[in-house]
Structures are given as C-alpha cells and as structure tokens.
Image (cartoon, rainbow, N blue to C red; front, side):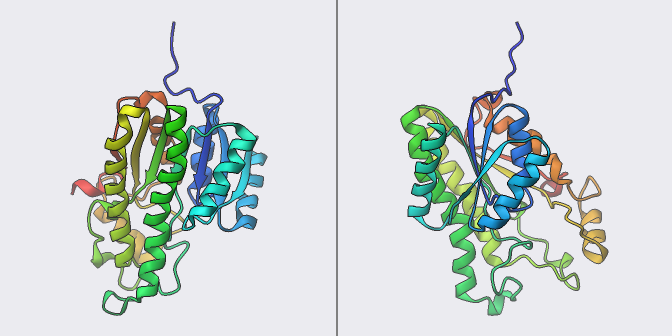
Length: 265
C-alpha cells in the first residue's frame, strides 16, 4: 500500500502576509495536497483580492485581518480560526517588509538609517514571527501536533552583496538582514524547545524572486547566482509542502534554502 507522505487533507493552514507576492503561492501549494487555507494580512482589501484570485483557480481560501506586530490581533485571528475550523495545523510566518512593501525610509543609507524604520522592520519581520510562534504554537502544543514554517531570506544566511544595488533603485537595508538572521535563530530556538512535543518549527529561505526585475539589477543578479537566474515564485511550492507535511516528520530547526546556489558561492 502506498502512502502519500505529502497528504495534507483536512489540515488547516494560516499564512500571514496574505496580500503579498508569495502567500498565494504557498496557498496554491498547500491546497493542492488538501489543506484548508486562511490568508491573513493587515491590508484586508488586498487580502480579499488575493482570496478572490485564488477562487478563480478553484482554490478555497478565506481572508482574515491580522496585524502581526500586535499580540491581541494574533489572539483574535486564532479565535476566529478555531471557531470556524476547530484547529490549526500549519502556520507560515510569511509577513514582512520587502522591496515590494517598504517602510517609510526603506532605501535610506546605513549611516542615516532612521531608528523608526529599524523598529518598524524588526517589528514586522521578527517580532511578528515571534508572536506567531508563541500564539499559534501554543494552540499546536495543546493539539499535540503542528508545523510552523518561518520565511527567512538569503540575507538571513549571508550579507547582501552591496555591489549589486547601486543604480538599480533597489536596496536591502540593515534592519532587513538583521531581522531575517533573527528569524533563523528564532526558528532554531523554538524548534528545539517543542520538537519532543509534536510541534515542528523550520524555516524556508527563498532566493531572489523574480518580480518583473529588469536592467542592471537583473543582469548582476544572474551573473552572481550559480543557476544563472532569479527564482520563479512557483519554485517554493515543493519546499512549503515538504515542511508542512509528514514527509518532513524528522526535520526540526532546519533552514531549507531554495536559492539556485546563491549562498554556497
């Protein structure tokens, strides 16, 4: 008898940053294996738009509000999900400030980088993941099983290559890199704390995701990546399903890097 190690039938998944570039990709991946999807975001209108687009692909999902920087907002999200679905099996801490969703002074140079932006980025990228692990993870502990996937970054593993950014209109501020290093550390801490209790915590590090990049940045990036290109947003799907499912039942505190080889050069 064959067993589908990747089967997620009936499992309930919360994905934060639901209005962003990658959340819908995570939803498509998990839904294909049977999971029920909740997209959560601070921007309710865009989150609803994302759910509507998924429904056009025959993917059932619901949109929920969540300010990942607020403990009470996480509590309300959990309460709503439990009332509607009765449990939560998977959490993807996907919300974050990026070049697509910037803080006010995201492009400021290190020497002049405002404390306000440092705090804003750290609050969303790192504190948001901490609160998600804490609030949703506590429910998973009660259930005796769950999988948390924290979305990290290349720049949580290595420093940004500062030479590729001048003249491109794209930047990677210090707070982004530091926050994503923190996400990897948070993952390891909680993973070792809860592994014996049935709750697995891992991270997934995407490479540079192509999002209509062009010109100088794209050419520099392609030359510096062993695979010779940026990642397509669909290329994280397999990693997400793997970490969410029982296929990774003995994988604890791992940072799954899907980057075309960027971090090994």
